[in-house]
Image (cartoon, rainbow, N blue to C red; front, side, top):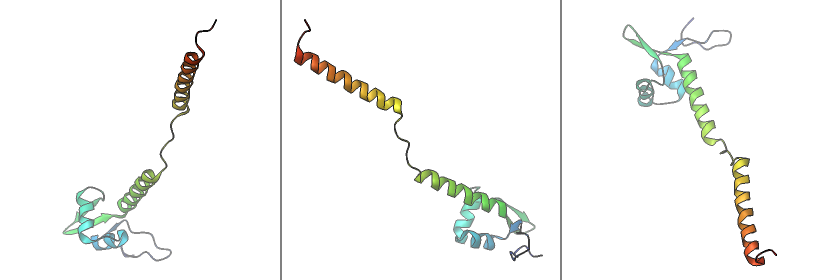
Length: 106
């Protein structure tokens, strides 16, 4: 079994070389090494050969998707308590205006 094979019935590789990882991520060589240096991907040296852990690629993609979902999620609306407070202050202002217009109660 080759570490590059992804054919049917064969297990997914645990590690891949950088060029394969960059193809999986559809990114450039520069961007791939930026991800490595930023700690976004896990890797190790096997002799002089760099190996990137495939699970770290999956985790990176999951983090990016979660961040994008959170950024595009609708913002929470004001709480009902805040709305009630705004309505009660408006009601108090209306009552004060009515008292001024009506004059003192006899």
